Length: 335
Image 1: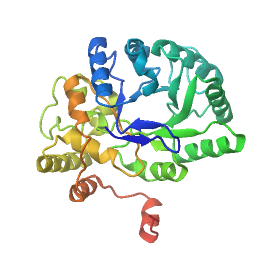
Image 2: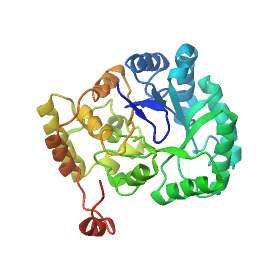
Image 3: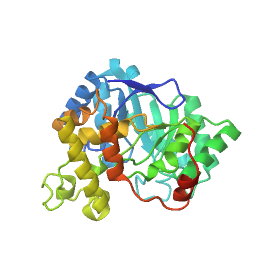
C-alpha cells in the first residue's frame, strides 16, 4: 500500500480509502470487523463514514471496532460527514451551527474517539450562510474535535466561494473534496478536479465503480444478479434508469477488453484508472463482502499501461458542452 499527502496538508493517507456505507445495511457487524481488520492489516489507514449511513449504524460499527483496536487509532485517518436529515425536526438537517455542533458530538460518541480526522460537509447547503458553516468548522478545529475540514457534493463555484471566504476570514480551510467520479461520471474533470489541483485540495472520489456497474456483473442483454444493488433494488441512484446508457455499455466493453489483456478484473481496472487520474488522492471503495474487498484491493501495486488508459479514455469520452468544448478547441492547458 502506498501513501499520499491529503492535499496541501502533511497528512498521509493510503492510496485507497475503505468506505463503510454498507456496514449495518448489507454487511453485519462481525463481517464488517473482519473487513476492517483485513484493510488495516494490509496497510490501509483511511476509513470513511457518515452520520446518516444506516441511521448511524455505520459509525457505531466502525466505533465498536476502534474500541477494540485503540492502539491503532493514532495511525488511522477517520473521515465522517454531516448535512443530511437525521430526524423530522426543522433543525435536524443542513450545515447550521446548531446541526453541526449536535452531530459532531453524536458521531464522536458512536465512533468511540475523541476526534475525527476529516469532517466533510456532505452537500452544499443553499439555506445556511456560508460564514456560519465555516466559522463553526473553524471552532471545531480549534477545539480539537476535528483535525481537518472537507467538502463533498459542491459545485466548483460553491467550493471556490468557500475557499476564498476561508482565506479572507482566516477560517480553517477545506483540505479535500469528495465528489462522484468514475469512468461513467467524468464531468468532475471539467471544473472540480482542475480547481482542486489549482488550490491544493485532495480529491476523494466516491462511487468509483458507479454503484457496481463497472464490476462486470451486469450484462447488456442479461438479468442482473439477484444479490446485487440492481437485483435488490437497493438505491435509486444505481438503478438502470439512472446508470444504464450506451456510454455505460461502451465503458464496460472497454473494461472487459483491458481486463482480459492485463489478467485483472474489471473492477480492479476501473479502480486503478480512477486512483491514478490527475489530482486524485484516494478513491473510496465500498464492499459488501470480504470477497469483494479483496478483489477491489487488487487495484493496488500495478498501473494500467498508457495504451490501455487510452482505450478506457476513448470508451468513456463524451462530447463536452459549451463552454468547455469551445475552450478546449482554442486553448491548451499548461502542464
